[in-house]
Amino acid sequence: MTRYHWFVFIVAALGWLFDCLDQQLFVLARPAAMKELLPPLDDAKAMAELVKIYGNYATAIFLAGWAIGGLVFGVLGDRIGRAKTMMLTILLYSVCTGLSALSQGFWDFAFYRFLTGLGVGGEFAVGVALVAEVMPARARPHTLALLQALSSVGNVAAALINMGLGVAETQGLVSSPWRIMFLIGALPALLVLVIRRRLKEPARWQRATHEGAVVRQLGSYAALFRHPTWRRHALIGLALACSGVIGLWAVGFFTPDLMRAVQRQGVTQRVYEEQIELARQQGNLPRAEQLEALWQGESTSRPGRLDDPLTQLKAEVDPIINGRLAIWAGITMITMYVGGFLGMFAYGLIAERIGRRGALAGSFLAAFVSTACVFLFLDDFYDLFWLVPLMGFCQFSLFAGYAIYFPELFPTHLRSTGISFCYNVGRLLAATGPLLQAELLKFFAGTDESLRYAGATMSAVFLVGLFILPFAPETRGKPLPE
Image (cartoon, one colour):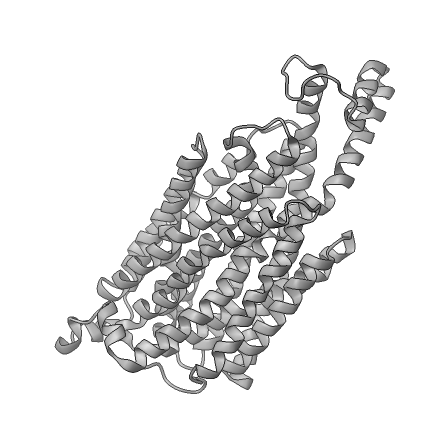
């Protein structure tokens, strides 16, 4: 690899890294944003269920934007070039993530998330096509796997930001930390300046644009589906992508919410015990008694009344609890992405040894088993450090598989279009995943473990990809189609 090869790789990796940063800022900020933007309810349990259900709605809208943006920008990537399209997508998702911080209600928040999704969806296809076409053949699968693995850095950065703001919230230094998170998500727009100055279009794409018979077909979905081989590859890739994307967004990314639910009772108890002890040490016995009454649920005043002293006291304690739960959510995401980094990095080596289909089959099966185990058995502090990383290893290895496999299915003049179709129509269909989980949450609403049961049920979606693989071509050792 030359210096320019490394430059292309770094730029593409940063674009995808920041893309994933914005995704995870949304995942981690979602519960707090929903709680603040939705009309409050007197019943705390009903409010918690409403937050989870509307969180799924917001996720579905985001994924729909992601899918539509991917389809549009995938075509542009073939028509106007990989570098130009990458610049547009990064600018769009950065600016609209920043605008999400200005939301005043659920629907304007959902609108900003939809616009962010447009940019986020377009970046993957053009970035992967760019790296696949620029890199030497021997380096291609490894650089694409590493490109996906480095996305974990963006995800971990989002978790660290969430944890830092959680600490600040417990100290009373910030309010509405989720808004600050989205403002931070606007910073990747600066990467556009680097792309505009130095990044060149791949030689393969430039040759394709000068071949007269092909020019009319650049970025054409009609051309993609008119050719029987490319049509078959597109439909197979779509089915494979649906399985992994639905599994990640409708199940995997709700693991921080599961950890919040698992830790809420213990964290709440510890916070009240600390506050009661602090009040006693300060000689403020009335406050200590009020805290005890609040913890025991002995208030006889109407819940939520502003002049109720217990309601006022609860408003002081809740940010401390939420801040600590945000830290737990951040730790959950970090352990998940540490596992994910290792899984995506290892996938490149495995796919070169046993082939693309064999590696994908192992990943689908492992993702199903590990995800079901997390949602059924995650119940202890120590589970966070082996169950969650194992799930991350298995789930995210699939996405290294997509990055390596999809460019090998399509010719140069349709590569960005084909990748985008597989990945982003997959996301459009994946938007139904959170909606289905919302219905499962309603179905299990009478239980104390609605999220746990819904997640375990949804994990079966990984098996869909396993049943599609016998129809997929093996591409190991073959050159990119021209």
